Amino acid sequence: MITTLYGYYELRQMLPTHASFANEASLARYEAHRKDLFTNKLGLPPAGFKDADVLEFGPDTGENALVFARWGAKMHLVEPNENAWPIIENYFSSYEVSKSLCSLEKADVAGYHSDRTFDVIVAEGFIYT
Picture 1 (cartoon, helix red, strand yellow):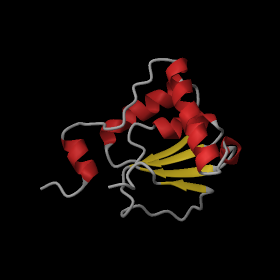
Picture 2: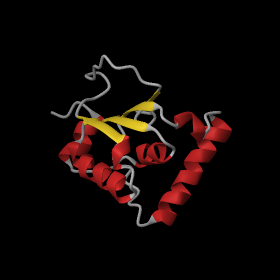
Picture 3: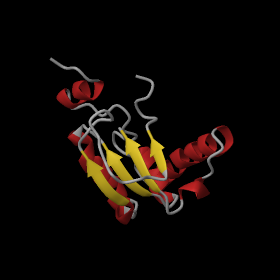
Picture 4: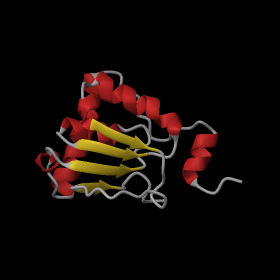
């Protein structure tokens, strides 16, 4: 019996938010939209991510995390669907921010525990569910 949305995705090998960036231009367009959201709507400009330890829950294939890394964040990702992990790792490698991917853990928000502190916590990817 499937009891979580990510379990549904994992079982069916679905990656619901995979943007499939083909090149730098497609990523740059995506990044511009994220910058608009964070700067103009949320009041959190990209400079706030510089050298920040960012914990993101449910990044799926990591497009938002990739943008945050490009803004200088040190990313700690908690993604329960391991089918997404190779895409995350490939994105970070392909766009030359591998050093910004500090950790990738299999857990959900309810099952995650850490003694670390983080500068920013992102949970936007699943909050609507």
